[in-house]
Length: 157
View 1 (cartoon, one colour):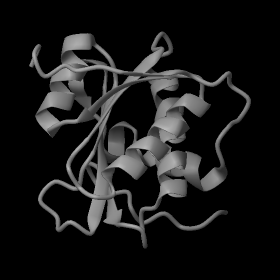
View 2: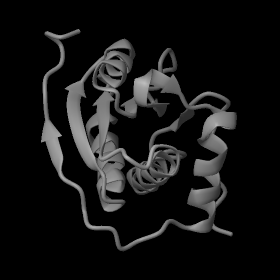
View 3: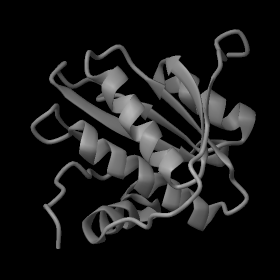
View 4: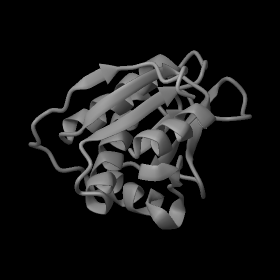
């Protein structure tokens, strides 16, 4: 068993940066999300990633994206975005998505809200528990690394 992960909540992932949620853990979370996506939606090749304005957002979004790409999926980076823009992107593009945000929590927190294609939310019973298992037991390696592409969806939104 690896380090205990306490950042998994009922409907999202959340913790104090960098004490509970740091870049190495966030990279593992990105990889775990990619594995989950591939298990539930094996035809998927791309994941949308956005972030809010928190100071820790850029480093955590990059780490999360690196984890996704390490599992062979491509990242569609929409950059600075509201949660509703990320959910719109997931529905509009029919892709799984993640937004790095801690919502209403103080600035020292950050987190991740996740959805599958069509903006179907990921919670404890629909994937977070599986992701926690993957992070706890170790993630597969060896996939060809995915690419990252930046895009602006604000106009479509």
